[in-house]
Length: 261
Image (cartoon, rainbow, N blue to C red; front, side, top):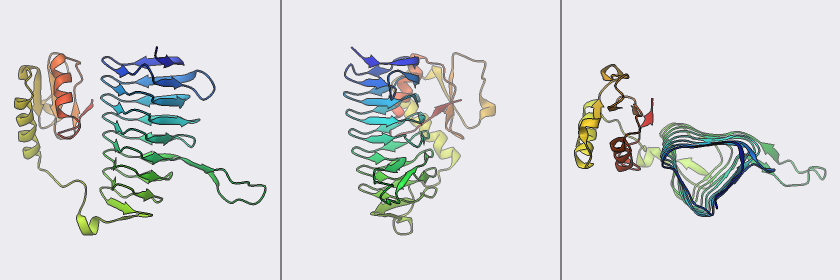
């Protein structure tokens, strides 16, 4: 039996939660748990938060622990590797399209030492992770701000904010982008359009239900039979059709990532 204790629970369509997973609040029932569509939560995952939310097509692999007193919000298309720890004692926000490799630890607090005896280290602080951020694996992350498209290589110990699209490595982690470049390079709109249409032809679905466009003004938002994928801003019109879901699963995790309008 799935162990979920929540006053307000919302689980999207086609989402799988392993029966061994445990989802609850810090002291009994959570106030709010929201799990998006087409998500996967694996074996022995523990989510102990009073307010927790994760977006569509996100995956939490086995034996991950997510906990904390303050809200924890994770966006669409997340991939969270096995044995990961995500702490939300100081509050944690993770954007869309983020990858957190196996055995990583993301922290929003530091507390243990005896303050009466003079210990100087006692703090909780929001951990703010932007969109398209990637912690490759075995990363330890302090309560920092990681800007969009930043990346930390395997084994990094991140103690300072991460700049947009920079790549970090080491302990403590430092930017190495001047040596190896950036996580993302510029791709023209035309190239994105052609590549996504190529993926569509490979996906073995009814392509009449999917339309690739270059801008939002090419979308008929009233047409509920067609899922429009806009390569200019990486959004799509969510229709929940069988072909749309198949296409999204075909694209994830490494071909392309889209979030709903």
